[in-house]
Image: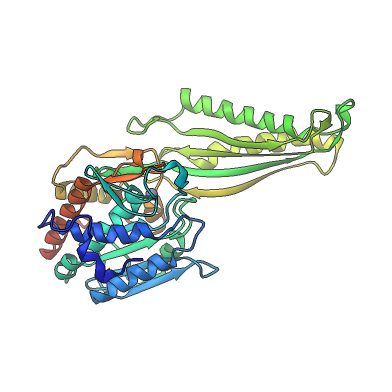
Length: 415
Ligand SMILES: [Zn+2]
């Protein structure tokens, strides 16, 4: 593992890109990528690395652990902790990497043709490295208006980890006034994203000989009826549901992604399980969309199943859920315009069809949040993930501009 002291002298970029501190950023990214923080693993080594790095710049960190103490969120304030300010947020976990499918080792940063390859480079350790690389500058500029860092765990499994941190902040006397989440958007400002709920449905029927199927309760065909209902809901949302053209697709979606049930063709299956998800655009309510299938199960399917076997059951278990980012308040619009104004290459604002922690910041802390970070989501979650060096330059330049504005107490999130 690298150490903070080594970060200023990355062999990848020695002597290149003077002026924007890129060598420091790449050195930090090299270290961050070397920690295998796949969501199933602990992130504590990476968190300790960040805490030690911040400590060398005189910044104290607060860690918020999970129930087992094997993972943690890190929260730190650069500047006056008694003031509100801007929160820069990102997750430390990454999706799994199968090394056999990669051209380079996934947990080693490799530069080729202006791109830095490695798991998490785009999603979203590149952003974390830019933020950490900007700390010396921000430490100088944030004396009046602070910048807070919120580095979470378990984002990739449904925005799970950050909730503990947000609950702590919701109880705190001083909470951030606004938040920027550095998910990969190619440094374009996103003001909204869809919400999502993933659900596991389990159908319990009654087994028996397939020669007398009416004596059993076929869990597979009951599950198929439920899936048919979900599919019809998806079609209705596509054809007649609320539309917001900024999203791709511009409507809420329902999708079934996994099914398991039955043992042999001559046995009535008594168990079937399937997973589905609802992704909602702001303005659509996930509860309302999902209510229909549960009502269909209770009112249409269960009575006839229980007439044959009283213990028949259909259960729904939420696997993960996070809210949409609406971004519709005046404060959110002001924040978004302010961030666009800090970019060296401003582009039109967008809406994201993938989720992020931004919706939770908006919902739990009731503060405006935008998404803007280096790299592309198109290069994330797949082999040979990379972030382009010029994206890191653009993000670092943005953070320098941010520090400059804060020095002059020019903020975008207050009236
Ligand atoms: Zn991400």
